[in-house]
Image (cartoon, rainbow over the protein chains, first blue to last red):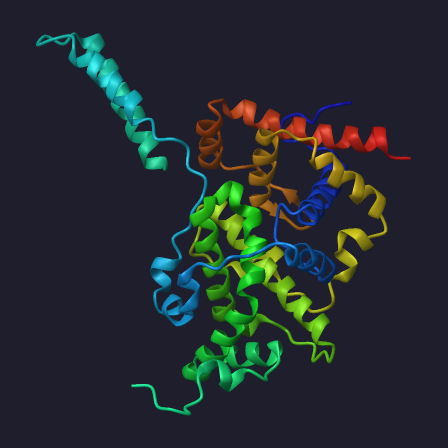
Length: 120
Length: 223
């Protein structure tokens, strides 16, 4: 099978992507959007016990603190603080005199650690 | 102090249909009290369902994320109630399913937007988030003309690895109807690179390989 290269895309990949999106919903990767999908989900959910947290007992409070409610959770790569600290400590162990190479490495380590933190 | 016999928000709208509740919710500028009372009734009617379907995002969002996400979806429904186009349908089951489909659209758009790190944009007004003005039944996977193909695709999705699944799902945050998935921005690629400790080239290859895998599955299992 020929693989798509660069900016070019197989013409039927657009169709495939649309079909995948539908299949993802049908397969339960995403929330149901069509009536048929909703009915199927309702049947499945009926067999499960959906336990509601107590915060759901006071909806008005949710409505009035929408700013804080809208904090979006998303997957978070691990913040490798330990690794960054180790890198810095390795440089610090060089002692009082820091060679330009070590100084450069410390700078790179710090930049990498800060860059990772900023991305979280 | 709560006055005895004073109707609570829930009893006030207990006999109204879901479409009526959405109508009152859409009047939040004119009558905020009625809008909030209607939303409270709406909230209690649909919270279990919304929580149930939002658990589908648990792998990405975590347990606490699902709770917040459910709340966000229902709050967003309050804010965007005016975008819902009522059908005036007498069949309460069909009406409920249609409204829950609309809630599903909101949830999916919130999910994709969270992947895009843009939690403050107006989700429901996005191209793929258009409120269905006609029944979307024809788009339902099981009823589509290519239902056999859809069924195969569902099975094929099950063959993907965790990594392929996450990368493919993330790429759909940039899906546009009629255009397909757009190129994933480098910042988002970096998040995936960190997560899987790999390179941007590899992430793109994982996605391509996942699509190839799905195509090959259909080719080998279809008639």
